[in-house]
Amino acid sequence: MITRRKTRMVNVGGVGIGGETPVSLQSMCTTRTHDIDATVRQVNELAAAGADIVRVAVPHHKDAAALADIRAQVSVPLVADIHFSHTLALESIEAGIDKLRLNPGNIRDPGKIREVVRAAGERKIPIRVGANAGSLDVSKYGPPCPAALVRSALDEVRVLEDEGFHDIVISLKSFDVPATIEAYRLMAEIVDYPFHLGITEAGLLFEGTIRSSAGIGAMLAMGMGDTLRVSLTADPVEEIRVGSELLKCMELREGGITIVACPSCGRCEIDLQATAEAVKARVAHIETSRPLRVAVMGCVVNGPGEARTADVGLAGGAGVGLIFARGEALGRVSADAMVDELVLQVERLAAEELGQDADS
Image (cartoon, rainbow, N blue to C red; front, side):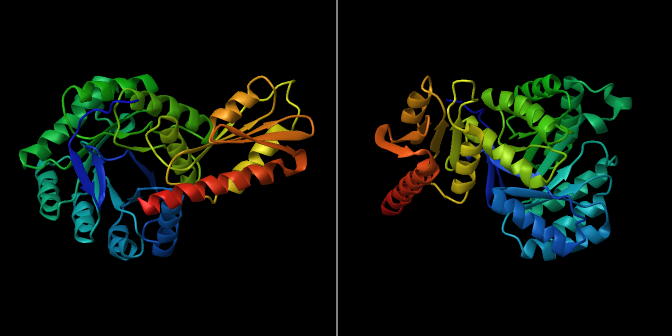
């Protein structure tokens, strides 16, 4: 059981970040924000995949002008990603954005930052102070390192605090996993603001998933993290899929189906990869109110034990499969019926869970 760091809670369009709220998932649109139809379509795709909050880029006035129309057509809170221009931040606030992301130091006039903070405070719009190793002011803070990231973010936080503003989320991102972890650890000793976790520029889908999981997983295990984005050079829906699975692995997100499958070896007597992929595809549509573990196993060493301890399990053998549900062996089925029977049991348990919740 992970003991999470105690933080303030901020409200982002009805989604809580920090406090006792669950760790939320974020992604960022790859569309040009002024392309309203494309942006709405991608925001809704991300929401359907499980995103709790979605960020959009606002580099131009036409992007800020599009925000109100986009906001009216989506159900999840939107974050405006602002760089260099305090005017774009003010326009985003007027458009009804749910949160701002500001990069420390790239709006260099403290007076302009204060103007943004006052406007955000009036509308109760939180601000993420998002420090990034790639955009660190090295002339002021020196080469990127954990302490430099912390100092950069704190300088911006102090400007906000001087205006009596405390609806703050902090991120301290780097490609360097150990440096990122250390930066968050240092900041956790100083402030009680919630943290947005991420490993920036993590890379393509395979490499980025590993790098992000190593860094974000380590920080979650340390109790840090209130919202996160898995940054991938891929379809942003993949960011949500990876982030969701990561939270389930850390037992920080309830609901959904987790597939347990052995790595296969020379003892395996079924086509385990094809069987597991078929099960995954067949159960993807099933909604569950509680975590549901489905085991697809292929040998006599670990198969029966893993299948028995899962909510629903299959221990496959030569031409047959033994089906389990809630620890009880339900019987043997032929190889060509294994997937159908396993999916049937998953559907049955999911329906029971949903029925129990409706009655409670």
